[in-house]
Length: 203
Length: 203
DNA sequence: TCGGTACTGGACATGATGTCTAGTACGCAG
DNA sequence: CTGCGTACTAGACATCATGTCCAGTACCGA
Image (cartoon, rainbow over all chains, first blue to last red; front, side):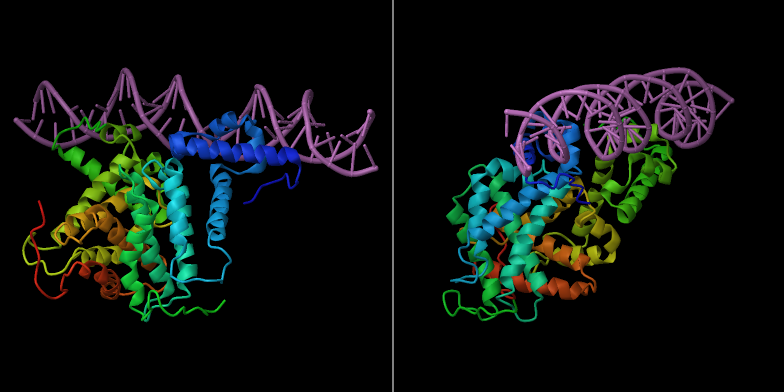
């Protein structure tokens, strides 16, 4: 699986990888996942195709890194983790803002011209975030996994709808809408939305 | 786009198409979307590859037919349309039952080994059903499209979760869970769950 | 029974993938 | 600054799936 032979912090390696990632994101945004080949990425990045394969096994392995970055970015946007968390699913704000800002890329990730791998990866990211979050706000009789699937799926498709719609709403409005819809579900467990901060689920 | 030259009701045509569809579904269930080629479908169906292309442009066009069937099946399961509709999103029961019954196929449609096209098609199917349904139960200040995305996405991922989980729940239980979670969202518009049947949204 | 149409299988061109190799360029340590 | 090693390069190669085309065969329907 990881076939990365150049294990170095060599400057050449860093430049090459950066170029490839950049090219990938650009091509993804403008042509969609199936709209470009490994060759195309290499051309755009000015990198030999053989070189590509010394770093990544395929397009998918290359894009995986970008998802790592995205995840880190989103989590970083939450401020100090474990700090002052007031509402469930607080990460949605950052995700929505980010998604609407980089609209072209996110449409390519989530929309019709995407690819199975990319989309699946994004789904996993969102639902994973939801699960981690909701672990702190359990609902009676509902497995966290199921709750996360529900809330994450809803968020995913709502964001998709916003990205595809002609006049995309403001991030705040969309976030508010989502929380307005998903709020009742969570408050069913007796969670006061602006009230006590229950926070102590197993680490 | 539709390149179907054999426009006939010829018995040979029907047999060929049926064989191809059957083979496709079987292969999809056991190998996943990317796990088989057009050639494989033809082999399993005992049909020449050239023949395949006289009927369908590619795998995707072939599978489209099956989705049509599925849609019809689900809608048929609702009884006379416009009849005695008591609750919003009534179609979920049929969908969930069907999905859990044909677990292998639906995991292939929705799961990790699926393909972008198939998955997208299924998403569109579910969200489309939700939209058609929810048109009859509007929620103040929320576009139907958005509401359908929310409810459909949640259903989609909840079903996926159930399909992937080890001990899959009973259809009734899953359906109940979904409606328990999504219910509050809809009742926000003042819909009594067991009460008055509001039914007359703008056509 | 016969005409037409669907099926057959095989050839062909195309394009992407992934592997490999010998040679070149460049970063980095000494 | 100098050379050692490692990353990069171009290109060849084998493989595989796709989609098109054609001449021949089989079979449906009238």
